[in-house]
Length: 140
Image (cartoon, rainbow, N blue to C red; front, top):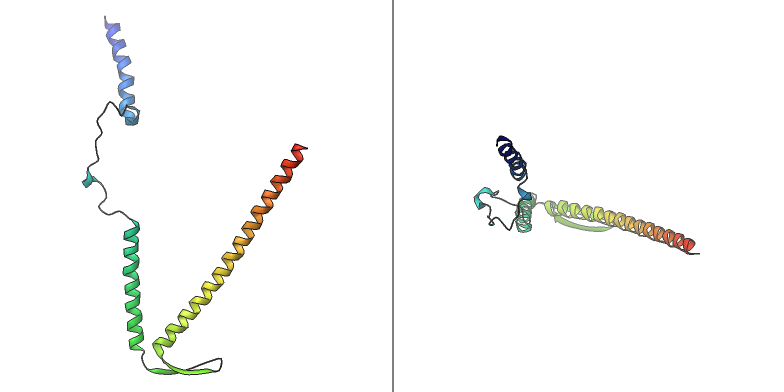
């Protein structure tokens, strides 16, 4: 009698430990679906809307700093550029110079991106051409 009860315990133990160790191994149809407690989730999650909102806040703060910069540097300065002469407020002239410098950097970046795309396209076409010649050689 003791051997049959020992066998029962031994056969029951592996199934109990496997279900305890791996909760995914149980059949989902046998158990009712339980939704997670919403209070257990993180209170703040990152979404696209929250990213846009953060970007708008940062942009407004940068705009505020620029407005203060322009207002504090409002006295006129004489500007000469390739024969063109004029007067601008100092803050506007410096801001205009920064914008023109940024546009030059963007133009250099666009040129580099176009160069890399052209090179990648040529590499893809070369690889495709190599594969086609190999397949033609095999078929002959």
